[in-house]
Image 1: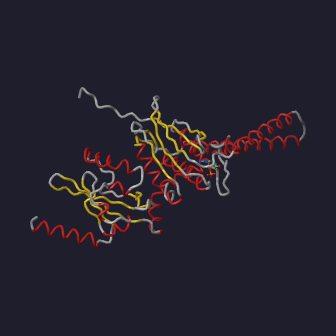
Image 2 (image 1 turned 45 degrees about the vertical axis):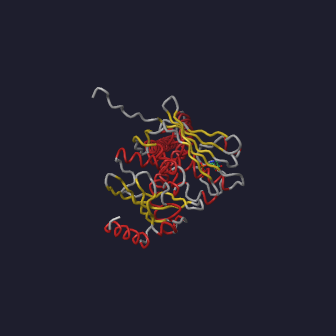
Image 3 (image 1 turned 180 degrees about the vertical axis):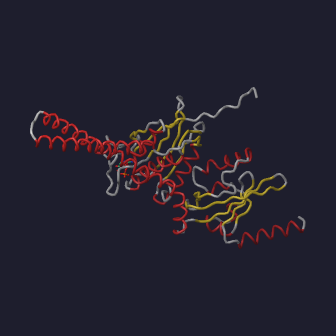
Length: 379
Ligand code: ADP
């Protein structure tokens, strides 16, 4: 080895020993070349246990199974999904626990070979986690509040419309009777009842406008990668799941990829279903297994399912589960599932629930698969 190379390696070693950030360098096959002392500490491994092995050992599912694919896709297409961008992802320590981390990836090319450098910031620290997660969550919760309000408005509109119609009918009856009566007082009464009927009509118009506004919503649909949507939503929804003893597995159909969807709305559906599943499992002493799966159907729909091993549905809510204000939780609003239904149906899909064989519940919904134009062979 020539002196210059040796000096360069010594320099790199000293950087990795002293840099306060966790840094990991991998080659283009995902094999770890070197890591900083902080990274050893963060993941709980000694360098010797990691160097030469695939970096996917530091990630939980589904990234663990998919990381080789991410690398392969990048090398083939050059499409950047994380390089130079930075994202909040989940890391897995030697003892199996997981933690949120911010990952930025840099790329280095040497003699036609690619190396990737990951810079990792641990977000376990409460304050940092909160600010980062808030960032991630703000989009989803903004939407969620918007939809929760919309859902309430639409329910209220429906509930108020019925008494308004009744008022208007009674007033019409009164007017007909008054028309047959004579005298000055009858005239005064007729005018007053007429005005009351006008006001009832006006209230009806206001309510109808409110419903129309809510129904229009603000939905922006694009062709989206379903596995990516699931990955982002579960990163958020699964924080703290492993610490509560919840085992998570993903069974994603490789042919179920593109869907036409409003990304934030569908993420919201997933986050709602996953959080409900975790909540119900944490309350039960049974095994805690969460499975998120997709399957492409022959009719060009994709079915997404979230299955838990919780206590199952309470009989008093089972029949009206997807209606607003149905809840068994002390602090629950009972809006989550009705929002899920509104969103899924607005996407032309269907949502339903089944009992899971062996105990627990499976929520399923469908989305329309998006077709990508095949490049014409004639061109
Ligand atoms: P909230 O969470 O505010 O109660 P939701 O609409 O999300 O509102 O849920 C309504 C009810 O449905 C819950 O209170 C609970 O009783 C039931 N539920 C939802 N998800 C599950 C599940 N995975 N297992 C059992 N029951 C569930």
